[in-house]
Amino acid sequence: MTATAWLTVFVLAVFVGFEVVAKVSSTLHTPLMSGANAIHGVVLVGAVLVTGRTETTAGLVLGLVAVVLATVNLVGGFVVTDRMLEMFRGREGRR
Picture 1 (cartoon, rainbow, N blue to C red):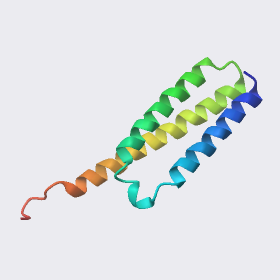
Picture 2 (spheres, rainbow, N blue to C red):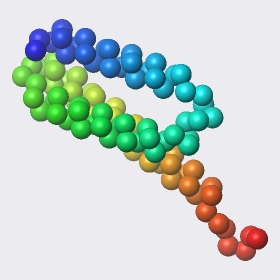
Picture 3 (tube, rainbow, N blue to C red):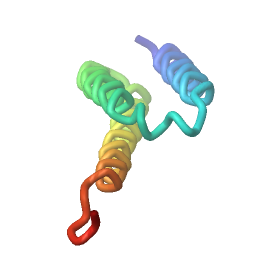
């Protein structure tokens, strides 16, 4: 695959991902975080596979950028989910 093809795929993936997330109401982001974590996990696996199979420098750079961004999304999703679950755990001395 040429560098132009890799760049096209990368830009289209960013655009589609942004459009999907932008259409969700902000009040639904936290309850849907576990589903988002699963999607980010799949994106991370795909990014690692693409990075490992590329033969060009541009493909490698774009793949590494995708791996870093997917990892940030995945870790951030778990942090937000943990904070959300902490709100629902019972506190001692409170009844």
